[in-house]
Length: 217
Image 1: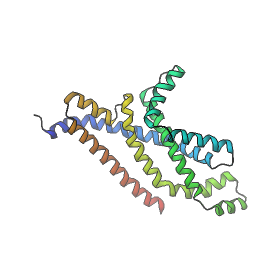
Image 2 (image 1 turned 90 degrees about the vertical axis):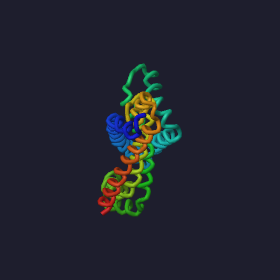
Image 3 (image 1 turned 135 degrees about the vertical axis):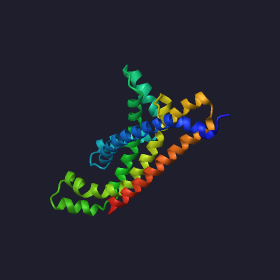
Image 4 (image 1 turned 180 degrees about the horizontal axis):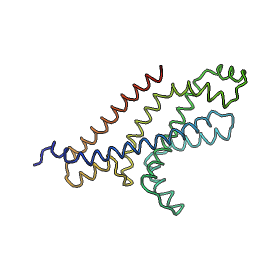
């Protein structure tokens, strides 16, 4: 019988290929999600009831439905309704981006609301517009406070990419399933997949913490 170590070594090239795809999906999705979350968070703190209502509806809708349902709806349901076709990668990135964007929007809203209102009033009394006050006074401070939450959301979204295997994206989890279907060594392959996720997340966490400490200074 082939040794467990040999099974893992034989599977490693394909698993590492899945790691690269996982990281790519997570990075692209989080960049888009940050823009979505920032816009939705700013809308949620605006004086306009319409903007606040739209942002609240988006956040509640996303947070109130499972990510797996969102993936199927964006990749299968919406294209069927519009009579179009989209690639699994586009559908997966859209689903992860919209999902993460809703949570980032709440982080942004909380970070902005955590800034002392006296600073806003002082800035406005000095003649700064609401936009300039937000850009020059509020957001620089709020972003520093939001950094740990952003890091946490990146890690969560990276793990969420494993759900994209259900629509055929050959990320780490999907590649693990393909390998198991050929060698039936579930224990070794799933152990290797779990170890790779752990290593990736551990390294990213340490890097982000280092950057966070430097950014806070």
